[in-house]
Length: 118
Length: 110
Image 1: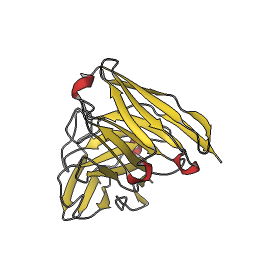
Image 2 (image 1 turned 90 degrees about the vertical axis):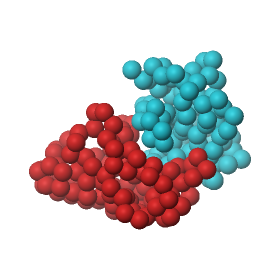
Image 3 (image 1 turned 180 degrees about the horizontal axis):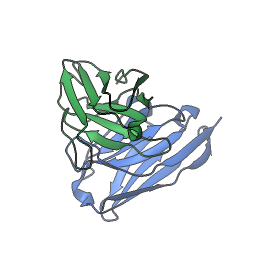
């Protein structure tokens, strides 16, 4: 059974930094694309970033470019999201997900809440 | 990277069919057959219901179906059931390994 468990969320001041982690099990982690998506309170889903299986290429939404960095450690079956220069509009539940079906994010974690106070 | 456009809400009685539209552009929905649909209950993670426009993953009921015409994709729920009351999001591949979600639709079972 595929399991994704996010951690690292919490309360941070505007301008601060936070590092989210996602521990994966039940999949061949090193063979899978991984992604982060987020959902602001009462709002819709937003894709944030994804990373190739070998970690050599990453992609992210314009609103986080230059501030967020997605990375992975295949030896630890772990995905990360380093978030710097946080703003109030980054407040959201952050989900990690993986695609065992090409281009279809079919496994999701339970999410971790990031709150940025101004 | 603008969000795909979905109706804010749709509703139907048990047993009826409802359809949710998802309108994008030729750079996303219209340009690729990688349209997915997710069901989300309050406080829960999204669940994949349709991928590649019209394919159902294992575990998704066959009353859920998908289609696409031009820049608009659609999710149809046939034989609406009480447990189908949830939020639904479309998502499309938009090239260069980026994705875009829809604005979300709340389905209400009357």
